[in-house]
View 1 (cartoon, rainbow, N blue to C red):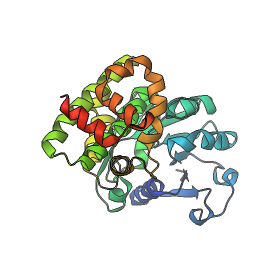
View 2: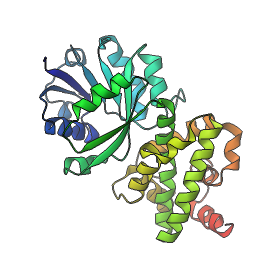
View 3: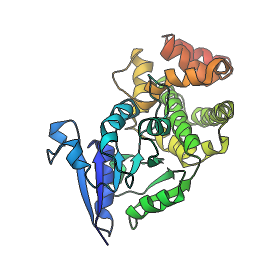
Length: 300
């Protein structure tokens, strides 16, 4: 059997974690890594040369860089290539989720979304991780899951690609609130209550968008949300804390970047969602986060 060639686009933390897992597999792969940052691009090969005869391409870039990355790799992507994206956001310009970006930029692409509690630092410390691998083709799931045989990444299959994409977006967006509430000093009892309200709102949003609301209860939604809630290195949690204490943040997180297009997608019905409305007042209308959160709890 010919050795599979795997290309990693984006040599940041999650890209490095994917490489770690692939090297842990009992199977042997030809792994090529590409990054625009020369300090993280070990081979120095051009993108075109990296992609020659690629069987799998892992797109390990955030949602705000996905559209550009897809345009760059599109001319060099062959019909046999399977594309896997780990991004969990919405493009600010087009208001498209990652699955929609792939389908718009690489026609008839074979692709999957990898989504769930997969913190890179834990993967590289040889801890277990879990994810939904969402694809419209079960054969794509079978091919990708085979790459991670005998590793500590456990995969579940879903054919509900767009629902998985949106549930991951919602998880990131609502995680901002957890960071803010941490800054506010609320206890675990309150976190438990708020987590229930978050799940309710996420399911309502899925129904508004005519998507499968049960997806929110799976690994890409609730599972990832719980992992994030207890994670000190989540960019969304850090962003939320920063916003609460300083009114703004220097962190660039998926939840923060996805909120404006998410509100556009939901439309006027967002005003009926208390937690999302709270985020809108703080992050879009630039209201004082401390006053808005105090007001929120006073009205419960």
